[in-house]
Length: 417
Ligand code: ADP
Ligand code: MG
Ligand code: ZN
Image (cartoon, rainbow, N blue to C red; front, side, top):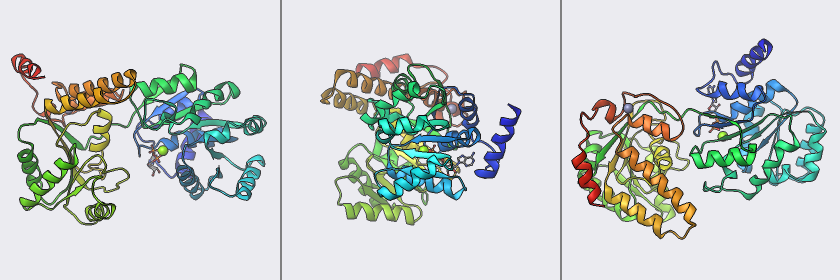
C-alpha cells in the first residue's frame, strides 16, 4: 500500500505534471486502485480522465477505455502520447492497416491504454482476445450514454453490462458529467448490476455569485443589471427567439452592445455574432439555449436567465459559462410563476411516454424548489447533484437571509396557478 501511494504521487507528478489532485480525483483513484466498482460524477473540465488514466498506469498491463466518439478518443490518445504514455485508439475512422498496426502494439504488451467504441469491444473476437491479455482496468467514459433518461442514449452502451461478468477480476470504473439521480441509478444498475461506489464532486463554482429575483418587468431588470456591469461580457438567456430579438433590440436601443443568437437566424449571422462575442471585449450575447455548447470564453462575467430553465441541469450548465477564469462572476435568474406554468404545459403537451413526462415534471419541481429556496441557494443546487455543502456565503439567500417566511404571499402566488 505504501508502495502504491508512492507510485500514485510519482505518476501524478512525472507523467501528468500535476502537483496535486483536484477535488474528488484522489477518492476515485483510490477506489479504483482498491478494485471497487466505481462511478465518478464530475462536471465537464473537472478532470475525469485522470481518474482512470492514473490508476491504469499504476496498475500496469493494458487498460481498456470505452468512449462513444472518435473525436474524443483521438483527442485523449494524442494528449496521452504527448505525456509519453503508450496509448492507442482502434476505431472505424482509421484505416485497416493503422488499426492492425495498433493492435499489434497492444498484443506486444507495449500499450497502456486502448480506446475503443463499445460495439468493437463487445465483439466475440475482441472479448476473447482481451481475455488472454493482462488487463489493468476497464473505464467507461461518458457512461450516461447507457441511460435512456439522458439525451445521449446509445444502444451499444447497454451491452457493456456484460463486462463485469466477462472480466470479474478487472477493476471497472464509469465516468460521467451527468449527475441526476435517474441517470446515476441507471448506470449503477446496468453497468454494475446494482451496486457501485458513487463519487460526486467538483460541481461547485465558488466564484459565481448566485442570485434569483422575482420577475416583474424583465426588460427593465435585465437592462439595469447589464448597465451596472457595462464593459463586461455577459450572456442573457431567453426562452424564445422572439424574446431574444426583443431583448437584444431593447439593450441596443439603450446604447449597449448586444447581439442576438438563436436557431432562427442564418448560420452566417449566428457565426458572425459568436465570433464578435469571442473576439471583442464587453459584448452582451442575448441567446436561446442554442448558444453556448463548446463556447470557450473565459472572461464571461455574468449569465442572466430572463426566463427560468426547465431543469437544474440546464441552469447549472448555462451559469457555468460564466467565470471560467476563476474571477468573480454572477448568475441572475428572473423567476416568474407564469414561466413555470408554460414549462409545465410544454411537458404535458409533449408526445412522450408518461414516465418520461413524470421525470421532466419532477425536474421542473426541483427548479421551482431552487427558485423558492429560503436556505443557501448553492447548497440546494449542489444537493440536487448529490454533492453535500454548507451555507456558501456567496448567494443572495446567504447574503440576505429571509427573516420570516411570508406564508400569505406564497399562498397568493399558489392561487395564481
Ligand atoms: P473531463 O473529462 O472531466 O471533462 P478532463 O479529464 O478532460 O476533464 O480534464 C480537463 C483538464 O483538466 C485537462 O486539461 C487536464 O489536463 C486538467 N487536469 C486534470 N487533472 C488535473 C490536476 N490534478 N491538476 C491540474 N490540471 C488537471
Ligand atoms: Mg472527459
Ligand atoms: Zn449561499
